[in-house]
Image (tube, helix red, strand yellow):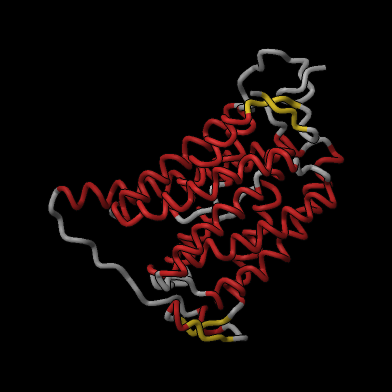
Length: 307
């Protein structure tokens, strides 16, 4: 049941990839993220070279995010105007990120940077999310009153030019902050192969102060555009997109995302954040360990590609 991946230059079990796509798609729909932060490390563990894993799984992120957005849009939970502004920044960030990715490949440091990025970003973000959500869960179980939260938006949001109305998000702010978040997400998409939802969702909630009901769907919407652009750029500029791998992954991703979106409403928000924080933290730690653990064969050119 193995199939040869021409760009990755390895053979893999294709039913395993379909199941993997469905599982990550389920996580994507459940948490409102692209799922790339989880897919890329697993592909590396399966023997796919990191540069190919990062670029090829972006199409899976697009497919699973599209499936999730369809469901959230039906519930009226997508701010398309906000999503387009962020996607505009994502396109700029993707252009810069792909060029940086190409430069790192020429230096032979792309794999190292990918691993370090996962260790730093996922380790920090996962730790913060897990700490906040566990604190909230313990407070609720002990019957303690909820701490008073400051809901006033930062003053700097109102001092910037280019103000726009975002009715669905309940905002009238400058377009520059969401555009800037999109740029950051675009760079992450190119370097790490992620949609950036694990960073954008908290930023949209706590920095932009968007309405909670519109955050997840809007995040997925901008992820679709940003990662689609990233995939095209990676294929044309770096030739690191394995179309066979991408196709197999997205077969399961579409179905999994729909199922995940249906289950999302059955859990408390803090429980979802705790689960997501734990997953993010574990993935970051595992990728970081690859930098320090001695490989079984020190003469491997790349994971899964023997000399």
